[in-house]
Structure formats: C-alpha cells, structure tokens
Length: 452
Image (cartoon, rainbow, N blue to C red; front, side, top):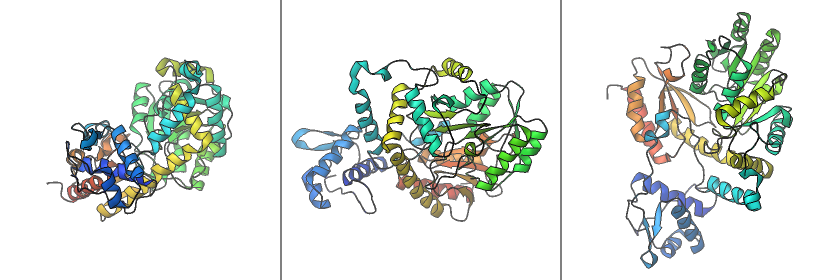
C-alpha cells in the first residue's frame, strides 16, 4: 500500500518510534496486509515532513521486530508471517495481568543497550555464571537502596532477588508458615496466592472490605481468632483495584502489632502511581514481608522481584527454598534491573507504562460509561460488576477473541460462588488502542445484553 501514511497526531517521544508503532498497529488491524509493499522511505519522509533518516530508522525497528522485510530496490514489504498472535490465544487464556508497552522501542532499546553494557567483560563476566540463590550482593544492595528510598529501611542482607513475585511468595510462605496456618485476606485476591495456599495447605480467611480495601477491625477480629498474618496488595489491588490511604495502612499496622501478627505486602503495582504511597513495610519493617516485582510495572519477560524480609526471618531457609524451586533469579536479568535502577532507566520504563495505562483507562471510561466498575487512573486493569442477570462466563468468551484479557471473578474468589457477578479486564499486553476500543465497546454491549 504505497499510499499508506501513519497518523502521528498526539504521539509523544521519538518520531521514528511513533512511525514504527504505526506500522505495527496497521498490520495488527489489517490496514497493512501480509505481502503488501510499504511506501518508499523517501516518499514517506516527504509526506510526513521528517528527515529520511527518521523513516529509515523506523523501518529498521519494524524489520528487527519481524514485521517487515526488505527486498533491495523493490522496497520494503509486510512479512507474510508478520501478524502477531491475538492476546486471547496467549496471555488472556492464562489470566495474566500484563502491563501495556509504551513507545515501540523503549523497552527493547533499554534491554539491548543495557545487555551490551553488562556483557563488555565477555566470557569472563560473572553474570554468566551461577549466582547465590538469594542473589549476588551487588543486586541485593541495589534493591536495598531502592527500597530505602521508598521509605522501607533495608540492607543487602535483608533483601533476596527472586525469579518473579510468585517465586518470592512461594519462598516466604514455605519458610515462614506451616500447614494449617491461617492467613486473612480480601474476599477476592490474586489467583497465584490462592494456588500457593492450596498447595502448601494454608487456610485463607476472607475478611470484610470497602472501596479502600481491607477493614482494619475485620483484620483485628481475624487475628483474635488465630490468623497469623494478613496478605494484601495496598496499591491497586488485583483484582478489585482498591488502594488504601495512609490512615488505613497505619491502622492495619496497629492491628498487626497488637496481635504480634505478620504482614505480607504484595506490592506488584506500588510504583505505577505518579505519586506512590509509602509501602506498609515502611510503617512496620520489623513484621512485614515486602515483594516488589518488575512483571507488573515493566514487563513479565524480566522475571525479577525484590523480596524484603522482616526481623527474625532466616535468609538461609529462604535461600534453600528458592534453590529448590528455581535455583536463582535469571542473573543477566537481575543485573539489568540493577543497572536500570542505577542509571534511572527503571523509572523511565515505569513512567512509559504509566503513560500508556492512563491512555487506556480513558478509553475504558468512554466505552464502559454507565456500567459499574472500579479502576485506578494510572493502572491497566479494572473490576467490572455485571448488571443483574449478567453472565460472566459468556462475557469473557465473547470478548477474548477480540484480544481483550478477561477473567471471571470466580477465579479470584476465596469463597467459592462469591465472584459470579464480576469480571476482571486487563487492558495491557499487545492490544492497540483501536482494537481495545472495539473490544471494550463489545464488552459493554454484552454486559448490558448478555443474550447477544
């Protein structure tokens, strides 16, 4: 389609990345079909009013991503195998909440340049070898500095580097609790926590909540009845999106201290807000396990999380479980996260995800107007309450083929049967704005008229 021209209106960041983004979006929507010829680079540069090198760089990015291929003097063509998989065929089937990716090359460029810098030592690089199961001291020290900056006083000896937040959860539950122990939590929680509790034979006790999350008095009642700990996500809870204010966090800490209980803070989304609240672990570092991962705020490809342990936790026992389950976090990825923390790239990557999440929430607000749902303005999932008679299973089956990640509320329900009227929608992953708007419009239609 030699007359094809991308719209760069409203785009921020480098123009070459915006053009490459537009190529990818046009391929996904069918505007550019496999085998079609793209406009000559010089002609496109003239139409857009940009330098030829800008278009050349954009085509290069699209070629590196496997979307187009060059044929010498014949020009550039959309690859026959360029169409990426629909989200519903991959991540949404697993029910994963995947962050949206911002500008086309932001994350790939950070990975490419960071990896090149880390591997300058060649085959002698220590990050190409096995690492201690709890992570090497350089990575643990960098994590401790980052946590301390957020108000959680930490030393390298108090931090473990894990292969993602799920790995951290398994390690702390396996070492700090025994079968039969009770952990109180919300009525709806992260499905991975539900699975681990069942595997380790831990009892989950759901307590009352409001729009701000768990109620301190309800938590105190659970502690009084024998619960040893509370599990929570204080910022942008998954799936309910509730965020606790500072007073709520302090009240929960007071309840835990009064009963000598433990706090498990799964801080998956804590850095997404432009003005993050202090973690609960900052208020009670002596009794809070704090998990800060990268999968939900940058990308799941990293598989790196930082686990800050409370007073009295035995790092040796923790490291033993980590070794048995995953040996270690990916050394190169852990070093990459450390490098990004040191250079400031970590914050820029999170900011890019945040910006894209805000844009997608605005689309959702328009498409779902009139329906009852909860969402954080700087998050990328929402909790949809279906109208009376709504069928969550039918809605999910209807929107997944459109590329929207949707999971029935029952998947998060601690008490079976309590989640039938809810659906969690995740607006991350590779879905673009055009497809997202279309999928959310269909979601609204199905929610209002489930018989369709």
